[in-house]
Length: 295
Image 1 (cartoon, rainbow, N blue to C red):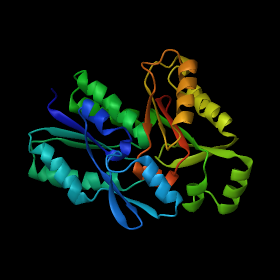
Image 2: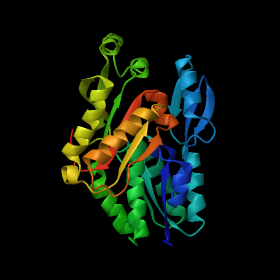
Image 3: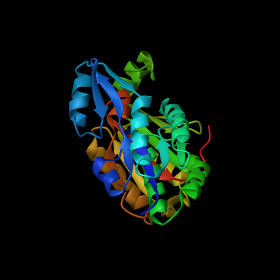
């Protein structure tokens, strides 16, 4: 048993059961539907279908980061147990949650001078953030101390890759990420935008792929291009999706065929409510360790 606690937020888009199994504690983001507050609690209180059905019916969805008072309560409950904390946050390129966590951590260090509190900006999101957490949990379980693990996380954060596409542009248009004109034309032509997360933790459009079938192939092509040792990649791979499980399984099957040396079968998770409130249904993402990502 380590003398420190590895923590993250619900936006790591794993599952409550998986994080409990990995002995990782998490704090929950919030989201609103038509002004009513909900916890992004990894689908414990609402199913993905319920969220997307309401969004498709016109419900206004907004997300908010974890309030500092909740971070304080979360961190302090661990410190009171006499444990140090290594917290991995959602990308600062997508949320101010990392900044809030760091402010709270500095305040708590004054109250608990004998404890270590590290906050790492993952520059990652969704199950890529989750795979980062999972990897740190592996290293912790192998006996790595908190200082070494913190330094490793800081040194390797840009090696975590995110490649994803969407076959439904409705909420990309509604959220202003795609213009109405481009979105309408793209929908007619069956365009699936291919995006990734860059070296500042922001979402960047990379390609316009015509047809979902080709988009599935392209995300796997990107993995072959960037993964450690290419198609000989022997690490872990996570896949997340928003309400298109059948297509996500096609991606998993293609990954298994293309990368025969994977450490284990790719794990597939539903995209969480915070990310899903912006992307809507129809998104599939692939996450893996690879070369250092750039702009």
